[in-house]
Length: 225
View (cartoon, rainbow, N blue to C red):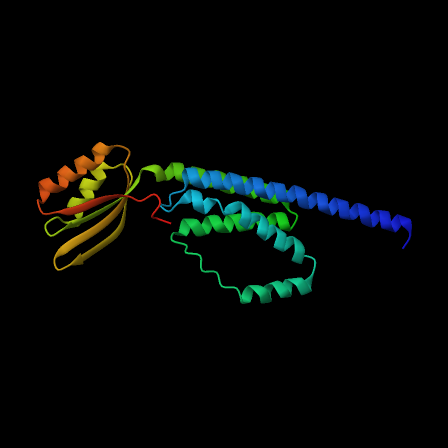
């Protein structure tokens, strides 16, 4: 191999390294933007900040794997074999979490395949559509700082009575559990409690309808993981 071939090979390696660094920075930036969006507009009641903190690592890890194996069939087969013995047991509680994980993986795949333009365009388009969808449904996301869990049990009140009371006193209400045992109705809600008066009004309304009603209000921002 002559000097010209060595210089050409060296220049190609530098160009490849430059593309890798640029794509890695873009992947980090896009995953960071997605994490900010998920924290702000996500509808999940789980700890969105903790969950979104994994986006950048997942995107960069996916990019690294694709970048290494894309030019080698042997490495690709080795990757399939390695993944076949790895079991992922992450608890995905809501479909929204899974869709955001797929988007993060898509960012890593696109950058690892050296397709930054189409990846950025697709990311912007998807994020814009998600934002428009959230505006159309006009559903407020839970603020983790004011998230409360409300447990109610009553032998007199019906589902309609309890739902009506909760909807009247809280702007954001999600029914998480409903069961009945020995004629007693048990219901669990996750609500957005911005004012203490909302809790006292709910308490008064429930006691007015059933003097024997049992209820509890729990600050649950760190308990739902």
